[in-house]
Length: 157
Image (cartoon, rainbow, N blue to C red; front, side, top):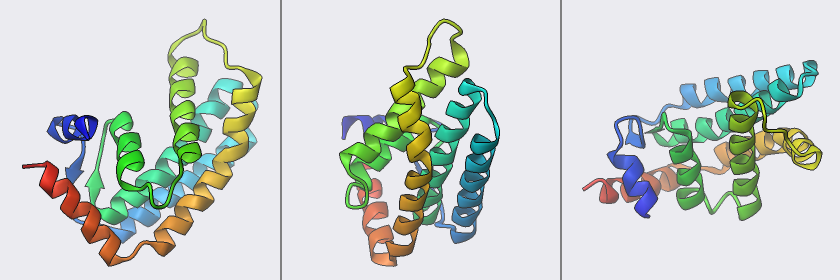
């Protein structure tokens, strides 16, 4: 929880906002658009970036549904691990974490190459991650939302 508390204290970290189903749908749409772009480009670096953002936007749609704003990607991923573990397992977290790190390596460093197995795993699993996030959005009810928000409120004191 130490990391979550750090994220809550950051200016652009985890912040409670009003839950917004419309924004959740908009982020799901952005995720779908990113996947479409991923399928239509051949450049490996851009494929990694669009695959990551497809997953990130899909995950962020859940945060919007709950009413959590986060502008620090590592905080969003930590939120997933700590508060959405009833929906996602360790392999889901490892996938998006690996995509996050691989995107950074690919986007910001010219001398870091992505292993072909890692590349294939990220690209191949991005559509499934989106589907899983859509399923979470369908399953999530007001009780789940309230429980998560209350946990954040307790940590924010």
